[in-house]
Length: 326
Length: 192
Image (cartoon, rainbow over all chains, first blue to last red; front, side, top):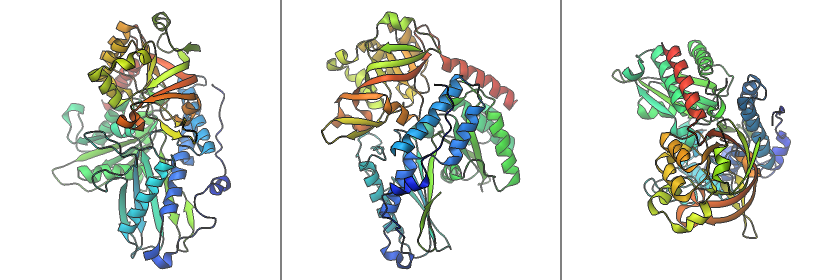
């Protein structure tokens, strides 16, 4: 199994030809009240579940090529690449755990959030029926599965974040966050005597190293870390997920934070945990960190771990209503 | 590469060592959180012939029902095994299970169970849902589908050349322990 797989995903034309959206579909932004995004969100989910972003594939290939050929780490990364090509070719889920489904919607004034939420919920129901998503939403205590991915008690799943902006267009980002990697996320309250972490960037660094060592291979390494420094317990964790939406290999706009991200990534890759915890040089694909506000008495470091199968995608509806995916 | 076909004998299992790469063939039974709690607490008799000398797979698959009423596996990678740590050793002993497939490895209690009964922990590549589903040749049966829901049900499947690595053997060896120890030592140096 050690022959090198050079990944080439199916072309954008082929992906578009399988779209659930009618040919040349455009959103009518002149009639925000009558806008129906259900099919567009379904298409967003179809693509997200079966196709990994190119930056993630590039990082996996870079990791593979940094491992000794024929080693277990090399073979495992190669199998991951093979899996990516299969799922893309078949348009089937990359991973059976299609995760908690999280949306971020940014929209102009005049669009009804209640209507968009209804449409997103309908799209998730349809995506579950069409087996793009596994039914992953159960009652907390009994474990009873609704089978539809709908929250049985409230309307809290799928998770939808809204933000109104000044632009005419709409952006909907989605992340499929697997349960295994969610379980190895961690929140620290500094100072933390157990790991000797104080209230400074050195302390933050210790939290990150500690979290990755505790995670071992269980979050499906090599992972992508989202780190929020500050916030309260809720906003910190929220931010730690949001920063994972940034493409791997892009710069953090804050130069000092960018340098920190690169340095900690290199450090983590000397831990020897490797893909799936088998040992190796590729423990993380990247670390994205952001500084936030905090209450003077609190200093939280919130870390979200995203598995190597980092399924995220942004649907952009431009000012003239045309749809693109990035 | 070692080819194994279920049912597996204790003798075959005792020969396996940490690091061995295995291609598994034959029947495998899926079970995860609810199933393990159920097996430990209820100990249903009807499961015994299904599990004896067989392999359990920690997996909640994406499954499609075909028009003719049969099922197909669409994505079927492993789920994190450590959640079954409180149950696994008992399950292995009660049902004489010879192997457990999952990801992330398991703890001391399971390791003792593997040694006592003669079983191994087999690691599959997490996230490789498509690749592993391709190696599922047939869905033979499903138990407790209504009661547990699709991701938690006991799916009985037939696999062909299912690619695995022995990461915990029946002699107390664990690749997970070795990697954890090394990474903890390195972390100490980084945090000094």
